[in-house]
Structure formats: C-alpha cells, structure tokens
Length: 407
Image 1 (cartoon, rainbow, N blue to C red):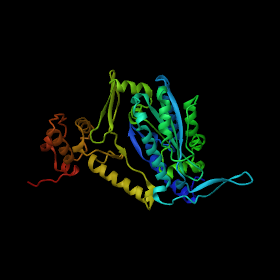
Image 2 (image 1 turned 90 degrees about the vertical axis):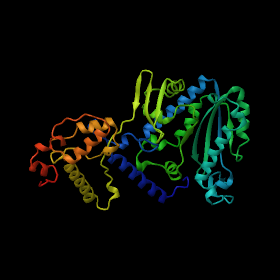
Image 3 (image 1 turned 30 degrees about the horizontal axis):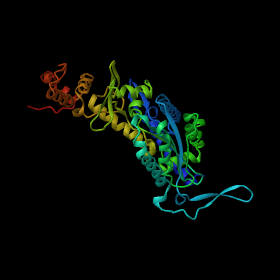
C-alpha cells in the first residue's frame, strides 16, 4: 500500500534501529548523571508521544489565536494532476473499487512522489503570496497544512487557512484559481477547525499514537520516511519552534509570541550558528545554553568486531587520562573535553581549579598556567606548580613525566 515495498520496509526498519541505538547509547554528562540523547530528541517516530503532544498544542494555539482575532476558516484539499499518479481507482461492475495502472503517468524524477510533494508546497506559497492574501495584514492571516498519500502513494495536501470575514470570498477565489486538477476542493462551513484538521493529521499518526513499536509501524509511516515528507507545516504566526522548545512549554505559544513581539522576552543568537544561546525576560534568565561535554561514543554497530574495538577504545582513553591526570584518577568519566586554548575564561578557571595538582603532569600544568597568564587570569594556587620546581627531587621529575637535566 502507498507504493511501499517489502524491500523499503526492511531498509527503513534497519535505518530506524540504527538511529534508536545511536540515541540510546550516546550520552550527555549532566550533574553527575549520563543522560542518553534519546531523552532530548523527538520526531514523529522517536519519542512520538512528545511530538504528537506538541503538534496538538500548536494546532490548538493557532485556532485559539484565530478565534481571538475573529478570523474565519477556509479548508482546501489540493491534489496533483493525472501524470503524477502511478495508479488510478476504477469501479468494477460488481461495485468493488480497484487500483489499476494509469496510462497518463509520467515515470521520471519530475513526477516522483517527492517532486509532487514539493509542487504542492510551492502551490501553498503561491496562494499565500497572491494579491488577495497580501491585501490582508500579516497578523490577520495564518494557515496549517498537512500532507498525506493516496492509496497509490501520490501525495495530496490539506490546507486550513484563517482570514478576516470580509476577505473570505476573495481568498476562496485565489485558492480555486490555482487548482491543478478537478479533484481539488474548498470548504468554508467548518464548525470546529481544530478537530477538522486534526482528523486528517491524526489518521497519518494512528500507528504511532496507539503502539509506536518498530514492528507495529504501518505503510503510511514508512511512506513519510521513504520520501522525506513532513507531516505538518504552519505559517510563521508564532515565535520559532526552536525558542519555544528551549523553554519546555513553560510559557504558552501565544503568550510567548506576544511577549517576544512586545520586546519583553529577549533572545540572544550566536552569530555563527544562528542558534539561541540565551533567553531572558524582564525578571531574569529563562534559559541559557550550557556547553556540556559528551560522554564517549558507543556505537558498536558501526564496528567490525564489537567487543574488541570497544574495549580497545576504552583502554586508549584510560591510558590518555592516566598520562594527563595521574594513575589515581581512573574513576574520571570518559569525556571529550574542549581544547584548553578554546575554553572560555570561566571554563578555563574552573578546569584549572579542578586539576589534581598532586599527580598531574607538570608540562600540562605549565601549559594551562601559561594560557591563564596570557589572559591576565591570576588565579594560581602556588601549590606544587612550576614555580616550585627547585624543591622537587629527581624522582619527582621522573614520576611526573619530565626529563631530568644532568646539569
């Protein structure tokens, strides 16, 4: 069904298993605990309950926003012309329906499932950029769209638009004038817009809502994965999802957007990555990015000999830690540290004060103190530092990995 073959299922299941293994077996070290990546990451399949809950919240928030603004809904189904459909539905004399090969189908990259999906998304942009929609103030128009497959796998799109009542007829005309075939349709008599659009969204997520196990996934989920198609898109009515997710839902989407637009919430963006690094309001900090070191990568499924390769890596890291911190520190977690010269002043001072000065290699200690001096950070403890080398014996030098000068 939906153009998914058994080979597709095997390939996609293997891909999902590898993703899940990676997310479960790699960790962030936070407050003395190893927390797997899977705790933070969610998508339509990974942590699907969180994904669906957020999806429901976004749709509900948009509907609440439209009601407060006095906007009216328009629902449209946008379908592709016959040349995009590999098969078509016919009705037999017995009354049964059957899928048969469509002679008008064009079998090339320009008419693939993904290309059809892109064409429908371009159609939505064309509608929203039309003269009738551009006459509406930006805050008075918003939309939700969701894509789903026909039985033969061809994509179609459901669009829910909210506009002021006085623009309703013009906007309906703008949508109808862009229909690609006769199966597309428009409705305006909708009593509960949220339930209406969620009916279409949830039917593509039923297998994930009921029992999101790998063996229970249906062809419709594999269709989204195979063709890299988004379940759901919406207008930029609210603050970006990246900011909303950083606050873990502590502030509602509507309230967060209003406060952000009024300048009551400030977001500091990293100029290089374009990602948020700090969020605060008039009362103080709401969120700040913390540079958390990664725990060693355990992805044994990528190795030929799982046990030997894994143990070899562990021994290499332990030997490195022994050389750097001394042999009494084998309880130190296997962390990928930031290079010393790239640490911030705060990180560098913290790192320096946590060094084991009784057992550390003095060459490494001298290197750290030189960087501190270059940054005018005078925070030395003066305990067994390079300043006290005259008090060390030859055995002390050998123990700490330094060459003894015969002179």
